[in-house]
Image (cartoon, rainbow, N blue to C red; front, side, top):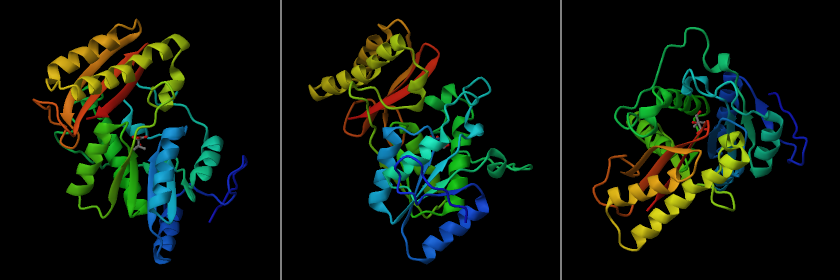
Length: 292
Ligand code: PAF
């Protein structure tokens, strides 16, 4: 097994694995030793949001595997695959400090060798919200997550509520394909001023960063209105849209009030309703949501 040591204050025990076969072998050894294995799939450029998921996996498992793979199949042709931020050395140190034991860093040809022809498609849930604006995105996500789950065969896998639609889609996929894994969802982590953490925040100029704050502000205000007795989705969503679009660089792609599990539009706001938005801030597309 190839093992590399962290350089910036990690525990120095992190195993870094690049091949599917080695990853399978390592996971099999852990399972044989009776370890509960947790997997945190990521695309790297780790921030506090990811680290909170790794810490959650650490609490729930004996051994934590974190995958770092910028998955080409979930990016559209005009999206940011090439410029998506990457910093593997830093990721390794941060992941290790947060409690990761094994970092799985496959290359694109390891995950998608010549002849790869299978796509995992979850019907319905993937047509709306982000799926309506990013055709094929969730096929890429489901395919890579299914592959990672098959390679590692973890007892549990942790995803973030920040990607609320992704969480619902992956839960559905795991249930429909009888995957023997528990899907755990960690809370959204925000900057001190409320902006949801995202690797894509690094694209924002200072002015755009200031405008992006309207997103979490509008969602918080929606929750305040709901808690004060407003249950009409249209009224609350109008407020969300206009609060965000007051900012010069922000354009709302969608604002929706849906059930957090089925993603069906709700007629009345209630517990479990997810108010979800996608917003273009300058050239950067940001998503966020709040669950009532
Ligand atoms: O949420 C992400 O970062 C990605 O969609 C995931 C789940 C790692 C699949 O590439």
